[in-house]
Image (cartoon, rainbow, N blue to C red; front, side, top):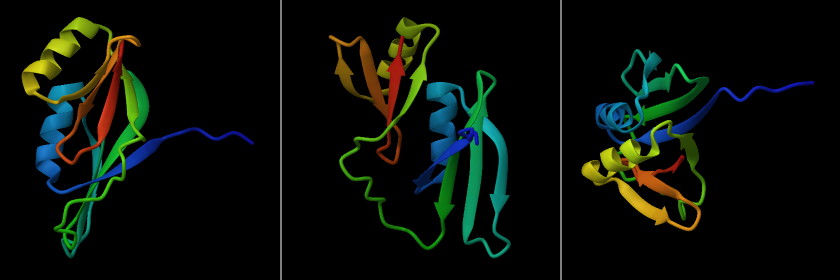
Length: 120
């Protein structure tokens, strides 16, 4: 039996703010979406041409409070083909939240507090 990873979900407070962040920071764009007829939720799947793996962003109408994402120990990782340019962009965006110079990596934080690792 084989399993293929297809997506991971992040719950977000503002779907448009999150879509803007992921497009600018990582080049991820909308692939498809599901919207409840009653307006109670919007689910948007984002990705890029480098992989068929998608990030599922879920907005829930009845969840106005900030999401508790624990101690932020879990994260998605992205390999940058131009690490220096990526670091420059993320510095300009002000979204770098942690750098490990010994390992040669850094993390960015999305508008909802999720950490994303960037590798060379």
